[in-house]
Length: 130
Image (cartoon, rainbow, N blue to C red; front, side, top):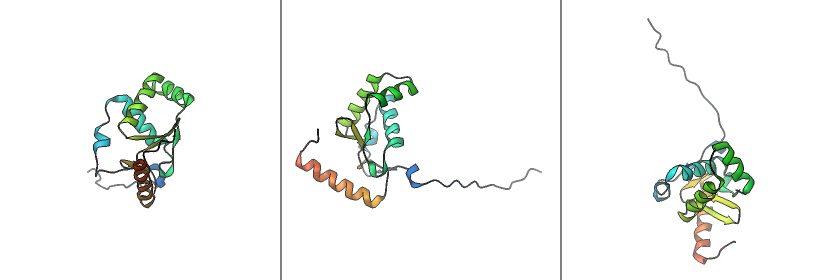
């Protein structure tokens, strides 16, 4: 008779391996259309710094992604622009992008609340960092 014993494998990973998705407002997630937007969002999830610190996406990064995924650099730029326009990503400065903490967060929950508060206060002033 075959054995019905179950094995459990436990893998320990640090908290930086995870990203939080906030479901209270799904509009950010539902607005994502097409393969390129999905590609760039998952790339941001993987490469975003702790507490959603900005990621530099310059010409060289776009070229690297282009070669790795066999896509055009312009397609990457277009997808980033669409994600910023949909407020899924935040463009902090010319080449700096971060995840919108309203939808996605990589870090401690208590830090997200403070960053989200600052983000809302920043948007109320209407100032632009560029």
